[in-house]
Image (cartoon, rainbow, N blue to C red; front, side):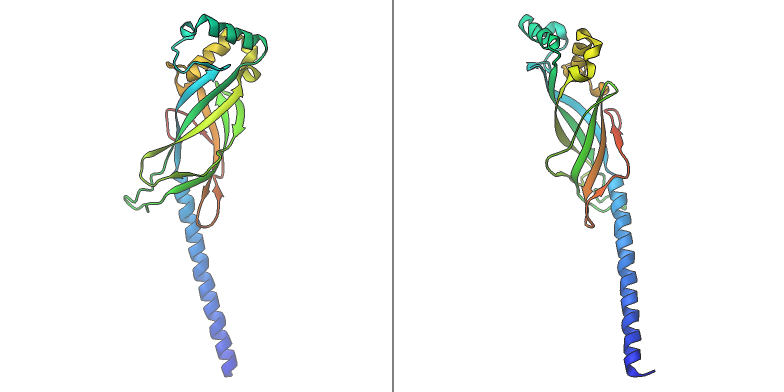
Length: 210
């Protein structure tokens, strides 16, 4: 075997070893990244600042707390087959990669949060976040305020005026809870190997981390 062939074999062998080592590292990075992403959990904290037809209900305990003038506005709006609602849904994200135990402290950057809003088990509007959200690797929850706007009549008008008002109060009134609110999401997280989306969708509720 001449010198040229010996050099060629050595070079090819080195390339194979380098490629194999890099491939192993890439596979390891992907595995670790998927594991870290999978540790992110979500929960609905509450609904705040809710208005219906421009009328504040977030500071009302029941329809009895609404003034006569505002009642007139609500009934008029319903009669026109319009019941526009606006509110902020406060979604909480938890990143447990805080460096304790065997975990490496890493921040999670959510690039996209494709969501579908579910009210009283009815799928309504869809949307996404406008900017990246950083969830620090601190083990503490990060609030993600999602501003929602939809016409409740479009989805619940067939239930009648009283029912739709009671639903609005249950969702965003001062005595309301997020029990009637769910969020169907598919997050996309920025990683060192590019954006990675969850393989499936997650239904987020208020009483448990998902």
